[in-house]
Image (cartoon, rainbow, N blue to C red; front, top):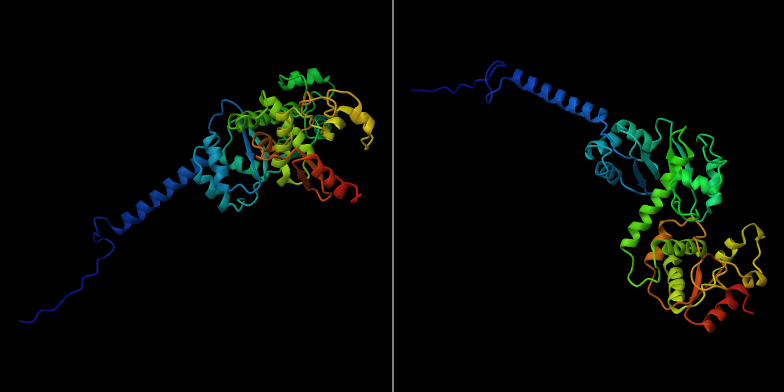
Length: 347
């Protein structure tokens, strides 16, 4: 008997692994709609914020790191969808470094606009490392998009309005690029800069090197401000900090020109003379031992780090080479030779 094989091709109404093809299409459509609903819900959902949330983005920070920090701080509910949103919108390379603050619930699309200034509503103000408070105050006063509420106040009244506990403002505000919406108050920017400095200073103080000659975080801040003003090349910061730390430990005078210049105020005409170094004042570190009474500038993160983690050296002196770098010495004879070489043309 002969047998013939038959191949049966199922029609669209035949059962295939328990589903009809129409059911498969229907299920896929449901999944797509569900995914779209979830995406729409994510894009529109803005978690409640009980207090303003600050976000600092350093140059070179990855998109994923930004999204994770936003998630960890409660600004968004999940990081990965925001990463894909950034990439699909082509804005992943447009995020601007700087300081941001979210004062109220903000949906992910609005977060993305803020981080990229895509909606054209964000204003940026850069506070430069090494500026004095007076320079910072003048910069804020010149921003037309801010609502100015303390320009005419006395310094004590202005500090009280900002919420600063200290009586002297120098060094208490973190230099960064601050992004804000037009119509924001100048006080809001000051408060952000003040909180940013406090967070970095107090956080760094907890992990500082042991046996530093600082009695408080404020003294470390004073040292950081000196390092900021004395540093020409970033790679020298930790060594410059080591010189001043070593001098403090030995009871030597710091002999730092920027502190003397700061103490002279408007009397400084661009030249530091011998009589200036001999004139007694709280900031003349040639006459008085120890740290000056306050910071002398706004230190950046690198100077804060150097003050709290100086290199371990025996250096007691340094002199500028003329190219931004410094020559370090452990004794006065070597230092004098370096001064002759780099500042007196070998004489």
